[in-house]
Length: 333
Image (cartoon, rainbow, N blue to C red; front, top):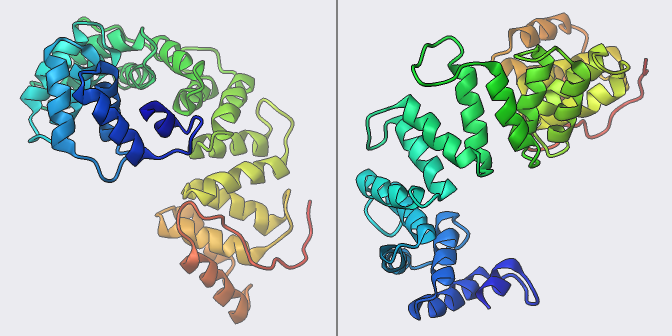
């Protein structure tokens, strides 16, 4: 019943009832129920949960050698949920689970060694643990391992392979599982020819996969490819679409480029008021070009138009759709 209430199968989703049923089963020694309590607790899916009770149940199951409980208990200690925060205890339980091949625990150990949390920072051990998790299909480990290869290109780390080809391999593993970060980063690999032949078609393919999942930077990069016709036919309308998605999420360069399209009527109706608002947002984010563009509009907007543009700026927050309430008529090139 706990799974049914958690997943909304047969009955409506109700995390509180899911917790109640998991607790009843866990009290009777059910290992799966105990593990699921840990997952709900560590993922923050339940507002009201007896964290100390979950910790006690997990410790009882972990002590019997269950790697899932060991991993979940390690998370509780690492982040101080229901128990005092204790990196040493977290490491102890992660190691127990990792030695049984638990990918999540291996990844967490890699993170601890990478950040020097409760242990001496050791980049080689970070790579070893991340790779152990990555080969099991752990997406976050695959992404972190790839980023590690990227960041260490100019460093000589004994025992650690170097190269963009390694990064591309692990980004592809994550991308093949539908991970947006993997898809985006693989797009960057092809876009910049890092360890592979420069290929704008492949870059566009992977950017598009990530962009459709709402990945802001992928949306911006895809907009660039459409605007300048790299790997595809130049299409300002599609460029505007993807710039808009990124701009809505606060990507300042996308706000600059979308503003340029509106200022010039490329793929959209000419709208200098909206262009001004976009450039104001980008300028506030520190983009110098946006400030230059604003100065070019000096004296070209009426006081009423300036007030309207300022209203767009002041009412917008990242994640909100950027738009002018009533766009006037204009031209489209």
